[in-house]
Image (cartoon, rainbow, N blue to C red; front, top):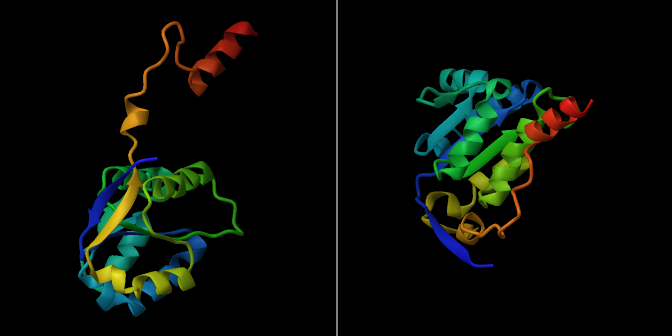
Length: 172
């Protein structure tokens, strides 16, 4: 596979996300790392963003709450190159009603090869890395071949989930 190099500037664009039972942990972590975070561009979902802005004393770009689409907004920003780094303190012991959104967000982070920290230890190691304050060339698979692939003549694209559901309804 071919790869493209995407430049991550010294001032990173960091998304901070936390499930309800992990918000306090993320706030404590962010307060401990306030000076390191202050010179980066910080994004956060809903309530987490409000709490962070209040506790840290600097501006946070606040998106929707996770269940209201905030996770998807961050995923879209990853795809668009507007997020370089994801710190997501998720709760592995608590079922989440928006679990598919969470999985999609983590998937986008992996597809676009951005660093992800899902717990405090990982976040500590990553934010203290010398790479955090340096220009970094991130390798991303070159998806142009996928985007421009030819669909063989006579073959139609696979039906969407909605189209399959509609077909089941009409068949019943």
